[in-house]
Structures are given as structure tokens and as C-alpha cells.
Length: 270
Image 1 (cartoon, rainbow, N blue to C red):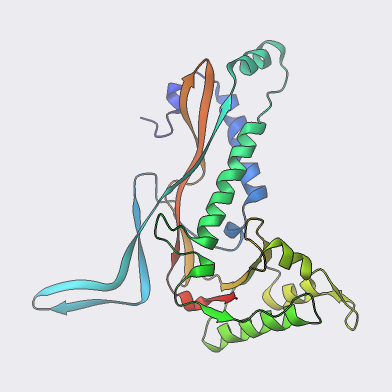
Image 2: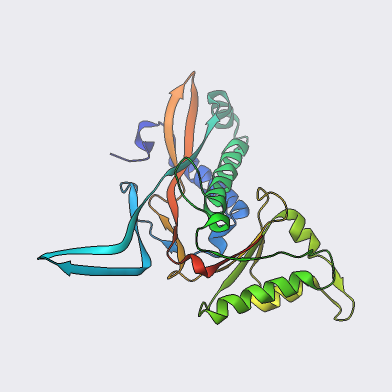
């Protein structure tokens, strides 16, 4: 049986291809954290949890028994958003050749993408998971006023130095709230360049804005997979939910979880 239940819907393959293309394009426009995090998987829709190995992982052998310490299990929650295509709209498009408006699919896809980013950055209290900005053991640096002088560049340089000093070298990525992103759009007269361009040159161009991040927020990560990655079971897909009131109901969904293997590879500006 098709896990996505598409076989239960009497819909042409061309329509499914159009829906898939619309959803994936919308997700690519919206998604933030996948632009710098490596993916582990997809490992399929079946697994409900995934292993997370900490830096102190080892196998302990004693009294004829072996066990692995420093390893935990992390739940792979489902992230989803539903949308509807009206039966009358489908019939009208079929009869006239008029393009089918898939705005509802695009909106659902973008909302699902925002939920993934929120889970990665902020964690979820219901699931008991941590995000990048509240990971226990992450380094913290006092954030100065990035509207003034070279404070933004100086703070990020300090964070990079902190990571490098402790051996966290590789791809760096900075995620900021919209107000902080705006603060970095200032010309440095002595250099003739924007503050954000200086920051990008420092960390390899990886500066991202997340719209639902609150205000005054910034976090820098060394985004190498040995420190942190995104475990994916079912990657973003569209499933068929039901035919109700002659309308077709769909679900954009995935299963995913942030694996923080070494929180010291994260610097939070507080």
C-alpha cells in the first residue's frame, strides 16, 4: 500500500506532478535551516525515533555485559499542514483547460517549512526538545547594540574566535531575527561596505534571517554534521487525506528532528 494513500484518490498523474512541484518550490523559497544543516536520511516514514550520539559515547563492557553510554533516542515527530482543492475547481479546469490555482498547496507548504525551522531554532516544550537558541551547554556571548559602530561584526568575530579556539572549525552559519538583519544593513564609511557584507566575508556568506524568531535574536553555529544535523524520516511529501463534501483534502508532511551532538558548537547571542 502507498503510505501517502495516493492510490485511493482518482486523480491524474499530471495533477500530482503539478502539486508536488508547487509544494517543493514553495518549501525551497521559505525554508531556512536546511540551507546550512546537513541531512541524515531520509530513513523512511516508519521510524519513530533516531539515535543521537554525544561526544562522550563509548561502549562499556563489565560483568559479561556490554552497553553504550552517551547515546540517546530522539523522537521523530511529524510536521504537517493540510490543504484542500475544491472538486468544482478541478472539474472547471478539466472542462475548460483553465489553469488550476494551487495557492492553497503553496501556503500549506510554506507553513510546514516554517514549523520545521521553528522546531530547529526554538525546540518544542511539548516534545521536550531543544533548539539552537536554547540548547543546554551552548556557549553564550553578550550581544551589544548592533545598530552602533562595528558592534555586529565584532560580536560575530568574537563568537567565531570562541568556536575556533575550542576546535570547532568548518562551515559557520548565522541566523538572526528580522530586526537584527536590518541592523546589519548599515554602511561602514571607513570601509565603503555594509556591515552584513563584512560578516558574510567572515563566515563564508552564510547569514540567514528567520521571520518568526522574535526580536534581538542571533545564533552562530558550526554546522558540521559531527556536531549537529537534521535527521529526516519521511522527507517533505504530499499525501491524500480524504474526499469530503466532494472536495479533495491533502497533507504536506515530513518527520524530522534536530540532532545536537555537541552543543558547544553553538554560540547564542544573549
